[in-house]
Length: 68
Image 1 (cartoon, one colour):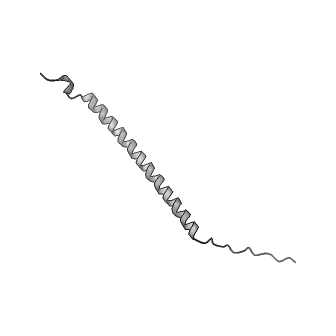
Image 2 (spheres, rainbow, N blue to C red):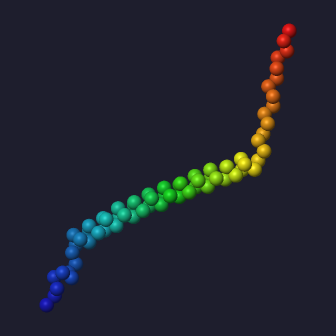
């Protein structure tokens, strides 16, 4: 005698397939956002280090007009 609880359920299979697709999309969005944040933080940190090590560039003094 076969156990009815071990039979394949097409509705459960479709539901799990849809849930897996949604979970995969959410995982993709989350990993993309994490990569975006890491690249932004790296760029900001690199810019801070470059700014700290480089001497500030002095702007030429504005030319004054002679008074008559």
